Length: 470
Ligand SMILES: Nc1ncnc2c1ncn2[C@@H]1O[C@H](COP(=O)(O)OS(=O)(=O)O)[C@@H](OP(=O)(O)O)[C@H]1O
Image 1 (cartoon, rainbow, N blue to C red):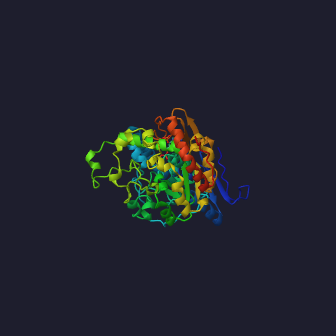
Image 2 (spheres, protein in one colour):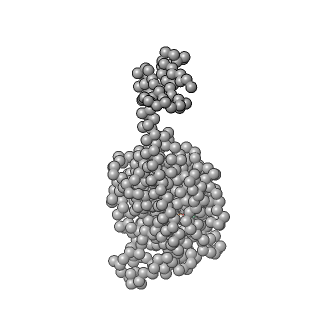
Image 3 (tube, rainbow, N blue to C red):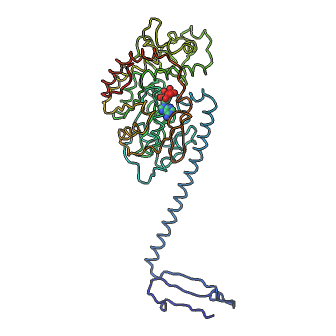
């Protein structure tokens, strides 16, 4: 077989490429082999073009390594996140006490960054185009777990002070609201209740301590935390204002009688899972405190002054001498605790006092402009979450993202559960507890009592929530 070798001059089209077609034999000195195997040698005759080819090749190589590096980093985070979530899930199903600690306690598992970023609230806006929603969701999953790997975080992220805070109200769906908002790729959430502004010992640690409790976020993402006791703690509005005068606040409320019963159900559940303290501990003001982060509202409110609420760790919290033994109090029915023996409403019973919303709300409006506060309807969040979430997206100036596809009704739980790209999730069993039976007479009496207070609340916030008056 003849081997045809083209030279540059013979090659018909006048490209700047030299193509030499020759048999293997042509490359060997002394072998008489079949020349059916051919090698194609391509050369570039023009130096500029050669340089261009080389540059393109080098850039492609660089990009390939960069992508490989990023995906390896992501895999590490995702694996850690999955492991941590599993750990949280299994611990939450193991004991109801653990659930309460996780739910109400401070997230002490936050990992620290080597870099100290400038303490500045990032403006709301669109995340960088390179950050796809799915990457953000995956990243969010990695950051918001109980035990992320120490010092691990995505490049170009930093911890930011919250630009929005769910300040309460307790038992109105604060956890559901935070988790639902977290479906939005532009939202990052603090893992636990941070209790920075309501607890003097935390507040004294300073804003840098608080910032380190926040998750890592991309520029343009909104960081949110929720601590329901902020709503009823007098010092909190001014403290939040001092941190960021343009912060946005979410106040979720629920029909006040239902909220009070829910609060009672939680207190009773905590009391039954907390070992009885020795009787003597209540006879001394210097005895060990009965308050704990896992049951923050066990301390009854000081009499006749609902504005004197303090969180349990606060240095000015209600004195132990005023407290009734917890178990003893929680063994009584809601009816007995809410209505005094003379038939009047026990306004100083904490579950009732917290539900008198206007008595706390006015303090917020003394500090913040009304447009900085959104009142979220907690009853509607239970019945049909999407419209409430749409209102919040627009309040936070976020692109519309959360929709019906993110929810499904779980008939066993009796509540909506969440669905994202990566998982389906219902809230824990401590959310959506069975309420104790309360006599219809007591419910009507309480509704009549609250009707006047509710109207004051509607006037303050300029919205009528339509709660029943009978
Ligand atoms: N989707 C969904 N799933 C489960 N539970 C839901 C949901 N949406 C709102 N809720 C209601 O949230 C109530 C608990 O409120 P909080 O999370 O604010 O409680 S806490 O103050 O943090 O303890 C909780 O109150 P209870 O029903 O009394 O347990 C729920 O009614």
